[in-house]
Length: 110
Image (tube, rainbow, N blue to C red; front, side):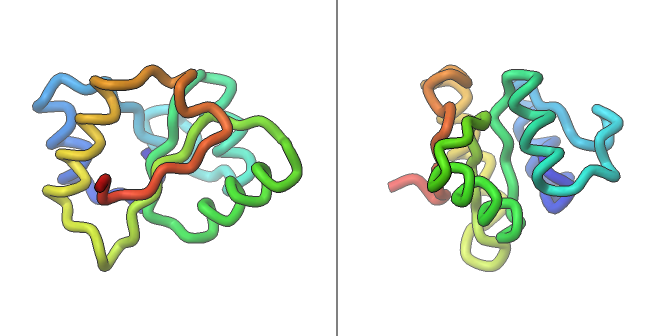
């Protein structure tokens, strides 16, 4: 989880048994977007964010064929907390991190 993710999303997922690692719990809070994407990749974890700048970093990596762990993005104003929890739980149970490598997924799922 990126620092821009409300605690309610993190807690909602944990209550549903989804393995969630926050930047703060990982000790990665002070990293810039490129570094946090590198960190998620090193850990083999898909990164969820609501930060458009981090989305831009992932998109730039796609354009330049620079590999990264997958990114799931939800706009802060257009996707509710409940929808994020529902869709992220679905992604966590229906995919593996390797399924999302070098991909950007957008919430809400359709």
